[in-house]
Length: 393
Image (cartoon, rainbow, N blue to C red; front, side):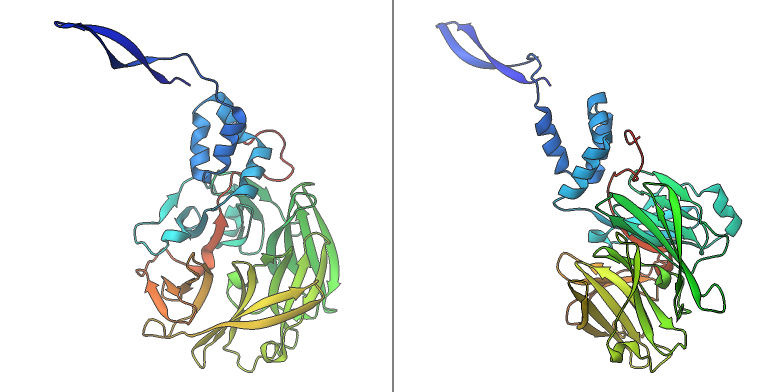
């Protein structure tokens, strides 16, 4: 690194000699910059800025491409960037920073996604099945999957261990083994209610399958509602009992590879109206059960509290009307904003913000690009996939 110094020069005037300061912009000898200081500076910068610095020099490229540095940057982020990604079709995607999600010109095309050729077998129907550590899990209907990092363009195809389509899917992170685990659930593969849970380890690159007796039936909701929500070390799905009279939450512990049922209070488990829609969503530090009561035009959000993984209870946290914009519409919460407001979709292709009292704060312009079924939220990162060796290219 070169710095500019100031040299003191003597000049003469008609009245005699005197000394004055004159700036000299000639380069001084190179100054060595402490490498640890560079690392600390980069660790405090946003992902997008750090990736740009890879082009400065070979040494910076090597540092930023190191997988251990990527992990440190992800864990140490002071203000991580969260983005909402939406697929317009099976080859075009747009993303927006959550902080500017309601700005009409804030959506940007994502150009680093290449649809795997094997997915052409299934035609259209691309959706986001999960999000974890900067990666999105994508799938066409309920067949093969692909892991993709929108920030770097890295992707990996994951071929399912069965040609039979699964009913549920998701992915989570095992911090002990530093592993991302992809999970699929196939319900009722025969008349005896036998079901199959399969999980794929990115670190070992292999599938493992276990059969369970699961007396559940998947809800005939839309695709996104079958995708698991990763929270507190487990993946969660909401289903109906086989008699379709009761709602059930099931959880798969990513570390212990164990499936269990999470009890719901009677007033939430029993469905008096077929028009009610349930779905789960991780928002902030909590897992929420979002209940759309169509007959009375109300949205209820219940947060899950867990004590030592043995005792679970649900607290009604938010209640608001679905007549927020002057007409009834389904509302699907996405996340909390920095001000504690709720950013949500409605069924009329619009993003909106709701305060804690259920009042409409602001809504964006109706946008044909928006599709709740094709969207997913992710945190920017330049992490490599577990099991990959060497530097991130």
